[in-house]
Image (cartoon, rainbow, N blue to C red):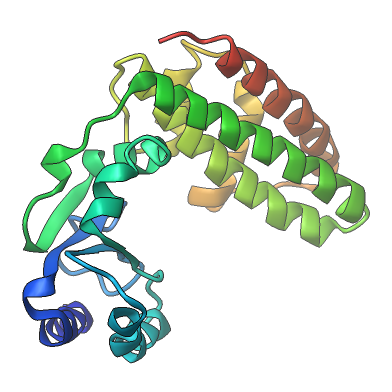
Amino acid sequence: MKNLDRFIESLKKNYGDNLISVIAFGSQANVEDAKNNLNLMVVTNELSAEDLYCISKSVQKWVKEKNPVPVIMDINEWYSSFDVYAIEYSDIRSNYRIIYGKDLVKDIVINKSELRLQCESELKDLLLKYKVNFLMNIDSEREMRKFIDVVIKTILVIFRSILRLHDSEVPYKATDIIEFVSKYVDFNKVVMTKLAKVKYENDTISKKELSYIEAELLINIRSLLNQVDKMHF
């Protein structure tokens, strides 16, 4: 992957011994010939404004090649964030590849209480955003479809975490995640499966279906929040 090699060389050139690790994570992490959409975590010993500035042009070029902005943090931030980013670190731990340097992922420790708390926080945030979007965009089919896409993506992240809370296998396919998690929480499985198929399998939603889904999502997000709030680990 020439784009990745070029970016790593830029990091090594600018950071030298200050660069500890570069970690690929997410769905493309272990795809050797991935051309874009590769999530990267860059960990350094220290991180100053000058350190960010010196690689800014390389980062901009990397993003122009249709990759997400890399997450850049120093080593203290890496180790002190396991609690507040329990969901994100759980996802990293489940699918990653060391591109350069040390394997810091093996040191990740996830506390289930903190993971549950972040799931609750994310659901509360999603519910708030959904209600605002409902108020502001309910007459815009286009905007509602766009936000529903965000909703299912967020819910699937939370569903993966709920499976991990119950020490369950976490399948790769979205519809399988929905099937597995239905053993632990109640929700409208038909609606969630439909949205997953729309996002990942090129299924479509009719205008009539959209009105029903809009109402059901409000009910289901609130219900999921109440159920996660009552979980104890």
